[in-house]
Image (tube, rainbow, N blue to C red):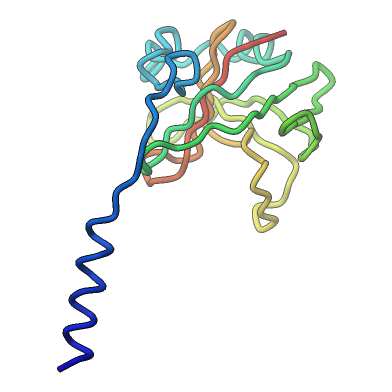
Amino acid sequence: MKKLLLGVMLVAFMSCEKTDSQPINETDKAETLDDFTCINEQADNPADLADAQNWIVGKWQLTGIIAMMPDVEVPNIQVEFKSDGGVFVEKDGENVFTDAYSVIENESNGYTSLQVITDQLPDNFDEYNIVKGTLRICESELMIDQGIAFDAPGYLFRKIE
């Protein structure tokens, strides 16, 4: 009986725990898909392959993550796509992933999409290979969808160079 009472009290104390929260400054707030008007227009109409291959070259800042978790913290990640086919991912100024990439057109079940692929083998997991997935891109907006319909993340970027 004492163990039951102790268990109930423990649950009661845990449920009453108070946490102080600070309001997020508007400038610190992560962006959402709603903040990306150009790539939203591409939901059913992807950009032209040649445009996508041209626009992707440059440096991009991660500004939002689409995930099935509340309040996902957006790490300081920059991705640089080079015109020679190299891609470099930096976290807090340190290189954490390097590979080769290609932007290709994929047709499946009558639906055409753009894909970013890397040379990394499918069974080699690397948490920083965030550049692989379905692509929506404009000159200054980029979304890489790794499967948001199946609870995998999507990454939102703004071009900085």
